[in-house]
Amino acid sequence: MNLEQKPSSPCVNLCRLQRPAEICVGCRRTLAEIRAWKNMSEPERLAIMRDLPSRPDLLSLEAG
Image (cartoon, rainbow, N blue to C red; front, side):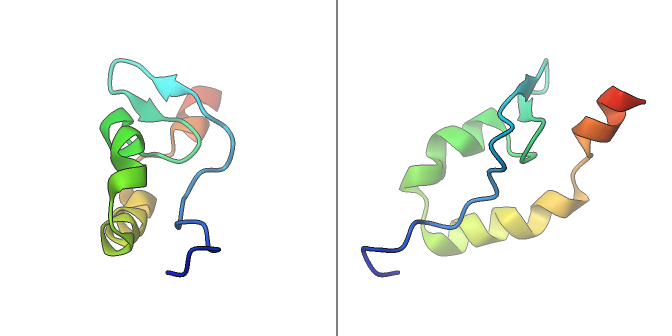
């Protein structure tokens, strides 16, 4: 990654934590993942991003 590129991120600017699980409703990352994100390597970020689609869609659960 060159210095001008931003690190990969699943953030969709809909930042709200679902309690008590502490999972972001927008991107499905845990609070611990969000806190550690800037210090993770790009391969670590990409591994989490590959896993995100298998996590529950909290937005649809809230609507239903």
